[in-house]
Image 1 (tube, rainbow, N blue to C red):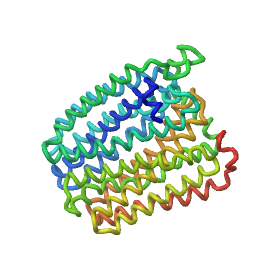
Image 2: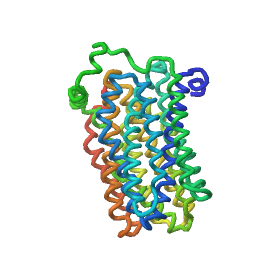
Image 3: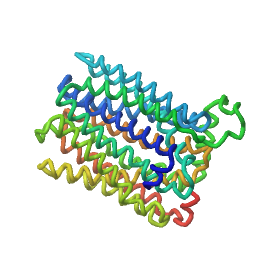
Image 4: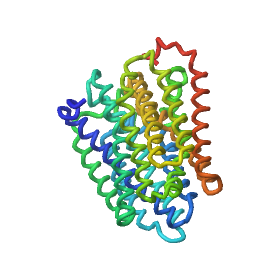
Length: 406
């Protein structure tokens, strides 16, 4: 894995661009949640912002994935980061009585830009490495989100408590501009040339989306892979409770940043711990089931404990399982889907997860100010366990011998 970063210049640039973009996302989000809790006196608008962030991405992903299959992915990444950089400037207006609605609008614009960066970067990756390196490349790339959740959340929480959330917003704009510059330096083609020529890029998007859905519909094993991430998604509303859990433990803004950082650390290490499952076809579905169940059980433990360090341990375990779940399923999808469909199928995969996250966060946001915080966390954990059980029952008849060609 080290050789990939030291010897493959283009992969290194893509990795760093993803690393910085993900870091900027969490460097921004923690100060936003802390700021909204301070300005509005509750958790409702924090829940709305989280739901808007994931909901807008989910709505745009099918179209963004289509664009990623039919246009220059490198230029798409650059444009998305520059648009996000401009959107972040709107966060400087989040003040006073209109803080909640203004934050929701700014985050919605930012999420629109993010929706195009993700499919472009993810579908470009297999074209920058050799087939034998894809497993390692996926593990490394999958670690970017977890790595920068640790770094971004920690720094965001610290700076929000020491100086001002608005300082964080300025830093985010600079980070996104840096990510765009890194993408600009990629030299290898980020996709296989379109067989139909330039006119295919101008063709209507919806037929291309229907083509991808038809490909997916004929492959039940692939359907099982694109629906597995929703297990963690349906329980993800518990993130709305993080600022209130911090108040419960008396740890303030730094505590919120620490909880998100531990969450990211688990997501970072989980894919490496479970990497062996990636190359063992017969372990894949059982491994995905176990990872879902671990997430739910760990958060049930978080809801039950009264000591902050133990809560942090539970968060770490939950997201180590969740991160492994994400990378295991994403790798299997990348390996089995052709390049000309990879952006659309990958976007569909993420869209399903994001819809689950959005619904969970919206419901949790409605309940967070009226339901005991730990009861809310337990309810989200049980929802994940119920989904995991249903998914396993629905997929246990799949012939494991055909997974490699799902």
